[in-house]
Structure formats: C-alpha cells, structure tokens
Length: 159
Image (tube, rainbow, N blue to C red; front, side, top):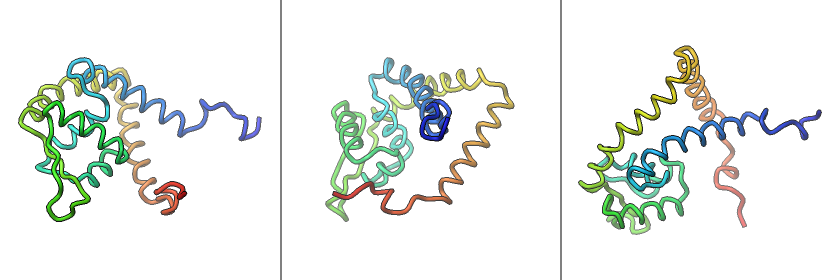
C-alpha cells in the first residue's frame, strides 16, 4: 500500500482531529443541554469570562474561530444577554466584547460541571497515559510554534 492509499485512520492529523472532536462533543453535552450554548458560544464565553474586554481580532485568534464564527456566536451571546459588543474607540473596524454579569454567573455555574465531565473522561486513562498526553500536547504545541506555516498558508488562498 502506498502513501496515497493508506487508511485514513493511520493519518495523524485525522486521528488528532477525531480525538479532539470526540472530547469536545462530550463537553458540549454539558454546556449545550444544560445552558443552551453552542461550542462556539462556550468558547467565546470561556475567553471573555476572565477578561475585562477583548477585541474581535484577539477573540478570533485566541478562540481559533474565524471572523464569521466569532460574529455569529457573539451575536447569539449578546441576544441572550451574556456579553456586550461595542465598536472599539481607537479603531472603528474592530469590535470590543465583554462578559455581562449574567454571562459571568452562567459561566461560573457551568464551568465546574464542564470540568467534572472533562476530568471524568481523563480519569478513564491511566495516570501515565494522562501525563504522556500532557507532555505530548505541550511538545506538539511547541513544534507547531517553531514550524509555523508560511504566510500564504496561514491566510488561505487568495482569489
């Protein structure tokens, strides 16, 4: 079997994506069913709950969501009264997001439940495997940072 026909299940990026998706879906059951939040909404609320304000650019970068996803999720969070969105005073092209008191309260209520579910999944692994996973994720993140893609790949193809 050549490299073009090998099973997808042996391709590391695919395996990593499947594991991350499975983990994320498990956690989504907690904040989705319990609090009516999508994964994108939870991710934004998680980032905003610990900050005074975050710009749209920083929110997109830190959440790994694109601008459209940030815009849609933030609109839903704003409609639910969980965050505020305003125009940045120093750059009218940017929006500035902040968690409301209600948003912080919801996050404070949901976080222990999400963490409990996360810990439940991780406890299904041996302590050695969990430690190896932590080391592996740290090493992978470091490798990604040092082997950054050329700028043309980071932005995607131009039309």
